[in-house]
Image (cartoon, rainbow, N blue to C red; front, top):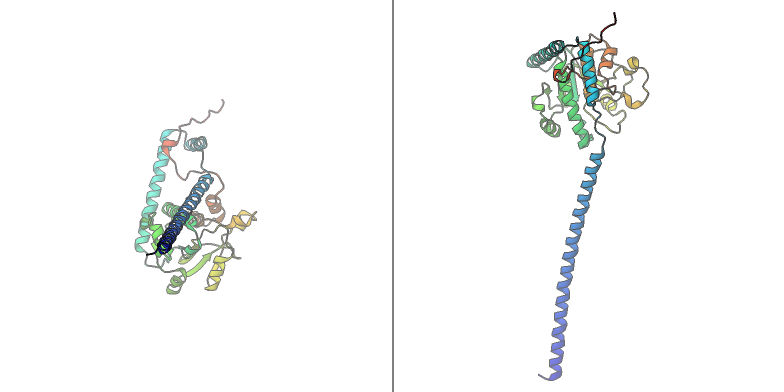
Amino acid sequence: MKPHQLALTAAATLVAGAFVRWLLADDDDEKDDEAAHRKQAALRARAREIKAQKAMARRPKRARPTAAKRLQQNNALAVAYGGSQDAVDVAARALRAAEAAARERLDAALKVYDGLSTDAPEIEVDLAWWELMDARQRRSLGRQLADTVAKCRRALKPTIVTLSSYTNEPKAHLEAIGSAKWPVVRDARDTWKRRRERTARVVYLTPDADEALEGLEDGVTYVVAGLVDRPVRKNCTRDAANLHGCEVRRLPLREFRGAMKRRREGILNVDVVVHILLRYRDNGGDWAEALQAALPDGKATPHRLQPRRIAVVTPPRTPP
């Protein structure tokens, strides 16, 4: 081979090698860019997670009574029950016995329940609004339902509470917090299917209704929307009830509590609504007392005596 041909061949070989190295280097750069992109995406996701955790940590926790406030309340209870440890213990035992008797009455009512409560009103919590709530609101509803069950167990008159649309996600979420042991009726049917298949009269309680609820009637099912809406979805429960031709009523807050200062004050938690209805039954039909006892007023009132935390206080002596 001639010298100039050898030179051309060597030059072509060098060019080809350089071109191959350039291609390989380009592939490596693309892989490096892809890895860097994935790393940046993971860092951004972690930063968002940390930001969310810090935001949750900065949230103000639910107001709880301080130790001094709790001691002051317990001292007042001790004085009211005679100021002695014996009086406090007797009162606490009486309260525990009353609560145990209430639980037995509720269990007996559930055993004879055949799908229609004719000798007492029935309270139904409509869980069909589950999809409209986010995770935080669903957790809040779960806590409210647990409080509802606790109030039902302490009610003097047993009242059947039904969870409708109890299936799929609502069922899985509530069973995770112990709903399988709650003394309630669990029904996979929604409110409107239950209404079609049963002969009971149904009244949907909504704060947007024009007419106030006058009283509770035996054999009537009163439906409470299992909805935690922040911000408030105005008229959604009323429109749903009107769409199915169902009666709507509101609690008589305006009649017995005066004019509402803010529109938001008419929106109550599920457990508060049920507590008002239970209290109304227990006190013989007094809305004013039921609202005063059940509506939150910002004060921490113990629902039962706690002997271990109650200090024995001697009542002040009257001067001779």
